[in-house]
Image (tube, rainbow over all chains, first blue to last red; front, side, top):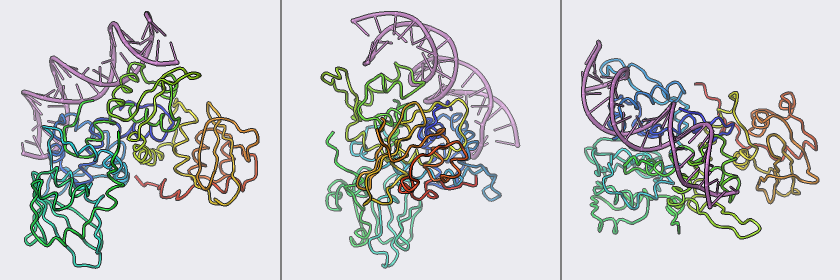
Length: 220
Length: 220
DNA sequence: CAGCATCCGCTTTGATACTG
DNA sequence: CAGTATCAAAGCGGATGCTG
């Protein structure tokens, strides 16, 4: 919460969102939508509970989120991003693009939650055939099942299961990440433990765009 | 330096550049180019010298910058960004875009250095007449004079003075920021203490692009 | 249970002084 | 110039307890 006291746009931004955990809280709210305190805590393994409470207060004061007592049947307080909070999405995308290259060598002991894929999925995937029928792909790779859906050329994600998906994608997170970011193809991904059921055409419609641009091979 | 231990691109990125001061060090190297230790310290008022040394070590280990002993006449070590370090520019731009809105109400006691404008200038300004003759605008607003130059449609900045600039822009930092981001026009800026010498056409060629998109009026 | 607040030990940071 | 050394203060992580 300590300010850099510099009249500089970057420094001013970091004054607000530069503290530890802050941007990950925004990540949670961005990917899961309005959330309860407990759900936020579950999505942020390792955070101290008092720290989460502190951050939520600070972020509310800064106008990034607002808390609201939801009526029954929810009957609890929900935290939701304000407009200003949603405007942080490009920041998260930029960091995620840069940090995504570090996922190639997964560190031992890292935790993983499926919904953390939502942001990169929306960023990397495009429907190559917007005119085609809507498709639904069931993703099973972490703690909770997720769905990748297309509608009018846009790709959306949400947690849940579909009764009759067009394809089912299942495998370890590293392989799913490598596949969805375009680092490996379906055949290579199969060799890495991925199973794919369904018409390959379905997946082909979701080609990762500009995989080289988003994951440049850096020499150093 | 403590890792979030999450298999998530955003968390992995923040593991490396999420520590206090880290992104501001990158800002310095991005705007000033290869720099000496002392110049970095001067560009980061408030940083403890041991902390700067620590960060530089960590960033070098992370492959973001490299130090090099420059031969005479420099005869000192220079710190320069690697390719991987330069790839952080979109992150800084995203944060700067978001944080720029906080510059509207300058806090009392903030420090200011002219070269902090370099990043937003490159981001916001475009030469509307790339075919025209190259132009040079002398900017005098902070501790050191700067130059805004156009070449082949691109806008570049550097510190220094020109013998015969096409225009001279002088005034308090807040006014310069408001003008260059398109929040106010030349006439309004004059009322706020800005002086402009030279052909107004020269400045008009550097219209800030999509000022609304980069500085949306947020309700909350 | 959801939503915190309190306490405590450890780590990080900030300010200053000092050195090759 | 380019750091290291020292130390107090602040921030963080982990455990636990309290309240509706």
